[in-house]
Image (cartoon, rainbow, N blue to C red; front, side, top):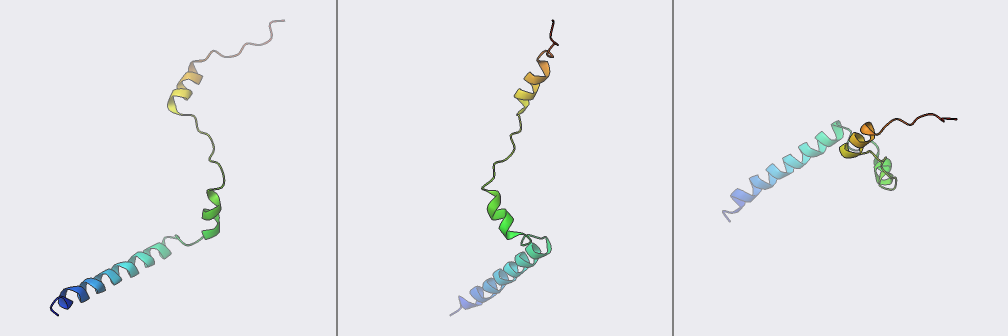
Length: 68
């Protein structure tokens, strides 16, 4: 029975934390566009060259015009 003296305040504290987290998420726009986030996984990300590829491209000689 004395465990209730620990569990009730602990439960109320967790409830307050959950309400605070939900309010924070609503204020910061976490629930604004739910459909687009679900569809975003279906599209491929643009390819960004890594640092090694960019360095190699910057050292490559510039193409010359047609010699004829």
